[in-house]
Length: 257
Image (tube, rainbow, N blue to C red; front, side):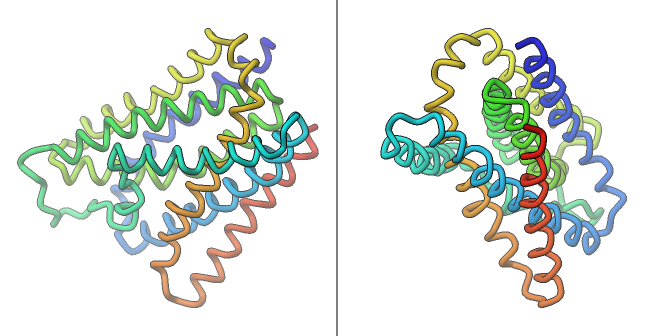
């Protein structure tokens, strides 16, 4: 079990480090940033769906003694994340195409939007850490697949969040620092799973289908609508290709078993 814990800690540290990518986006023009972000979103769609349908759902049904309950837990995961987003007013993906990184953006004199983003991001990252920790207790292969899916999702999100914090009036240094601090809640999530290891292993069979439902919801309800905003045919071809690559990455991880 020590190896799984090591992998889980390395994974959440890597996920947390993605928050630093925001500062790199300042050097990109809005046009180039828009193109990069959409391709990353498409990759994340494929990774989330691939992880859910290739790894998590088969694992859930393989360990299940009640397939109807397992199916309901998948739907429950989707509904859980829907309610959570409603309650926390998570609108990260509404901003990822317009992160407001140009100098002509007018910063707000107050920072309510920035505070909302930081609070919701912290809770989001805490959940990511718990999901990654439990995934590694299932198997190293499932843990790696889940980590890749989360990483691909975090890159465009952190780009957008960094831009939102700048627009809310934070300096670049403070935006970077606060984004990193919120990202470190993923480490807290894994530590919670490690401390409650016995309990986490007991409930893993129930949590896996819930995680699958969450991933399906994020891909279909949060990310795919962003791709629909791009109307150009050639860009659509690239996005579909990126989705396929994301799914294929999840398929390749089957050979780690």
